[in-house]
Length: 180
Image (cartoon, rainbow, N blue to C red; front, top):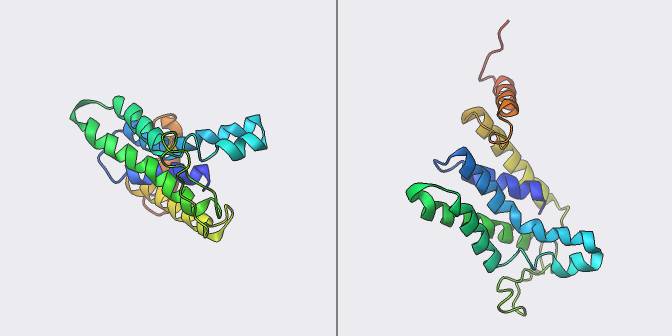
């Protein structure tokens, strides 16, 4: 699946829980960071074909992501957010299992057992209607969060832009009246 789809997954799921802005940002990271192995494209097509879905798409990397992100949480919530981040890293793997095209393997036990892999012969093409529909549903959910919870995925990085996006979404939805 596309990276923005993974980011929106983290955002939408993170908004189901009473989290801080920082923890919601970590949810987006947990759901999308496995695609860092896609940077192997910089070394060429062969490196990409070898390392994408290998280095970042496995149990060990999911545990590293969840542990690292949970370490930035405060107080007694650390176990809860660890589980949430681990689940979001796994959501990435599940989405890629279905949405990265047929026979694109996920080496779940790498590096401990490099021969074990999940391969979906019926995986959707990267540009499929299923991936587009998933992204559209998540985008609508993201807009609904802006309207009803008054926040967007940019809340932590650019609060001013977040405020403007929320105002625009609420105005378009008829939730806030613009002064005459």
